[in-house]
Structures are given as C-alpha cells and as structure tokens.
Image (cartoon, rainbow, N blue to C red; front, top):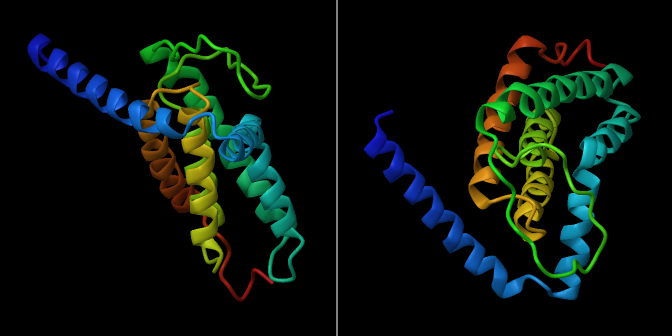
Length: 187
C-alpha cells in the first residue's frame, strides 16, 4: 500500500474509532451496563465463557465430549495465531483510560490490534453454531463479549471489528478442516 493510501486508510480508521467511542461514551458508566460489560469482558479472558459453554453442551444427549475438545483445540489455535504472530505484525497501543474503573479488569499484556476477545468470540460462536439451533444465541453472546472490549476501553472499535472478522474466517476454516461427524454418527 502506498504512503498516501496508507495515510488515508489510517485517517478513516481513526474517524471510525472516534465516532464509535463518542457513542459509547454516552452510555459508558451506566451501572447496569458496567456490570454486564465488565462481566462479559472478564468471562472472555482466556476464552473461559466458550469453554464453559462447550463443556455444558457436551453433556447434552445429542453431543459427545469430543465436541468440547474440538472447540478447545480450535480456540487454542486461534489464540496462538492472534496473540502471537498476528498481533506482533501490528503492535498497536491500547486506548488510554485516565479515570478509575468502576470494576476490576485484567489488563492484557499483548498489543491492541486485533482484539483477541472478538476473534475468540466469533471463532467459538462459528464452531458452536454448527448444526445447533442455538446458533444465533452463540453469535449474540459473542457480540456482547466483543463489544465489551470497546465499552471497558481495552480496545479501539476497529480492533474489535478486525478481530470479529478474523474470528468468522477462522471458524469457517476450522469447520472445513475439522467437520462435525455426520448427524447419524454424532449420537
């Protein structure tokens, strides 16, 4: 990408981030939203929420424990890729937060771009949703976890969008590489 094109793209991303941040600032600090968003962000740490969901699902009569192993393995690969080489390519700083936070929050050691929470959320939702009528619920939960990172100001909005898109792509790859067994054999 040429210098002028790169600068235009950077300005467009900065405008997008600023516009979304202004909108989130209007609701940030609401005690009810704080509770939900800080909890979602914390549950997204180390993909805890996705491991809990997949372990619970593995107990269902139409599922097997291998399904939880599949989700865990896919998330391990996603985390290694996103928090390793992909974040190292960008090294973007996290947003500044000057005031005291209303709730405790773990501060990540990795760089900001892309959001690992958003990537893991959409990867997990995509894998969990395969042949599951609760699929839309997994994506909704993933959206809450991903957007919580903007609300708690750990990520720029563009980090979350990029992480979510990356997660969708990784889920599609995972479903091709490691498909669920045929429905008749899955029981």
